Length: 113
Image (tube, rainbow, N blue to C red; front, side):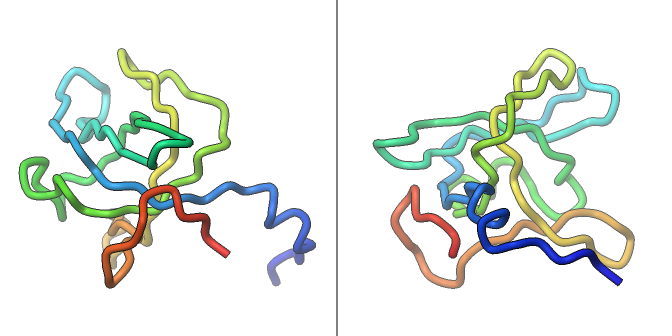
């Protein structure tokens, strides 16, 4: 059984909505990934992330896609990229990520509740 957390614990995780404004594949990493630049709005700004999304996403076709990401983890060095946010997804049947994205266009920077 999963361990319960308090609502206060949940509030510590800052999950925001952003729009992918740039994306390109990087083969320089141990595991090829798509490098994303995501616009989280005026207050948060543009942040980078690295994610292994190639199975379901073409970098040229995800520009403009809105995604959810944790923005308050410490930045993490991944190869030659400093990943500033963790984009969120669910695994498909093979364990490959499918991005969390709203059904309708929303304002960048919106906080998950």
